[in-house]
Image (tube, rainbow, N blue to C red; front, side, top):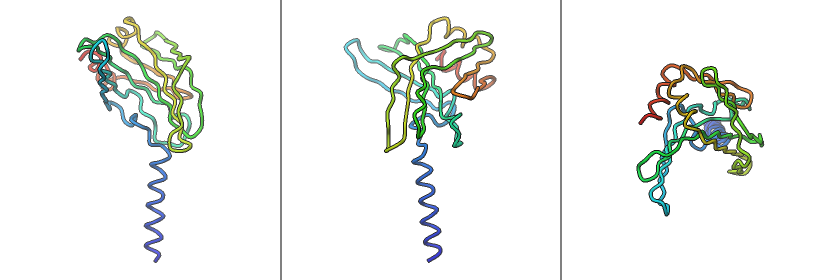
Length: 170
């Protein structure tokens, strides 16, 4: 009987951990995803790569992750963007992030972010920031990138930065 209670408790704990932070697709650095849709203009393809994953702790400091997108129409890349995603049990009302590429700091704001409640009380907030050609070029030539996401600063350099550059240059 004790074994059954123990197994049931262990199973309940595992299920509750999964339901606390399912993270809906922003789990690990380098994770990619592709969405393709037919539009009146042709085939729209949005490819994303996680560049700052959502952390695994229960701290609010690491519940905001960051992706970069490569957007193409009919096979021709026409834009890049950053997507900031917050996942948690409380609203954060995120409206912007700051990115420092080498010595240049960019402030990104989204005046109309997507905010949803999933699975009862699980909250997601998604912000979209279009990148200018200059910002994309700065990333291509960067030695270091820092992202200020809520109350944490994440540094991207070395192999991680090389993988981001490869994603942009594909």
